[in-house]
Length: 56
Image (cartoon, rainbow, N blue to C red; front, side):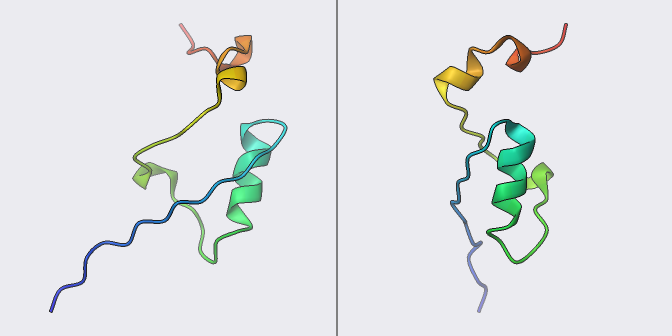
């Protein structure tokens, strides 16, 4: 019998993305692997900051 994939929905906040990621890591028992993420949700206020724009 095969098992269906497990999906986790977790959230965290921080002063910047690095702080939010560190807070998120504290909530899960295993090391997060960002390459497997399918969705990132970033709030409007953060998305509108100049340092959040893509390079180029």
